[in-house]
Image 1 (cartoon, rainbow, N blue to C red):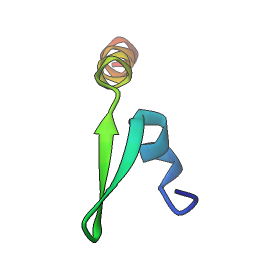
Image 2 (tube, helix red, strand yellow):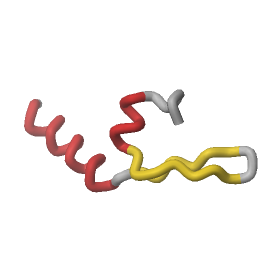
Image 3 (spheres, helix red, strand yellow):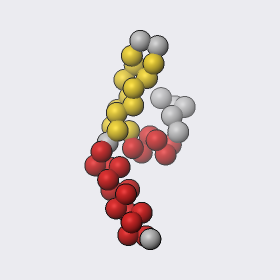
Length: 42
């Protein structure tokens, strides 16, 4: 969706519409990449 926070959009593998709700599917590989990047920067 256009109103999805860009930071969250980078982590989203997909968005699915449920009954009155949205489900954001996380891209676990991307989440783990970010964790590694943060650890390396520290």
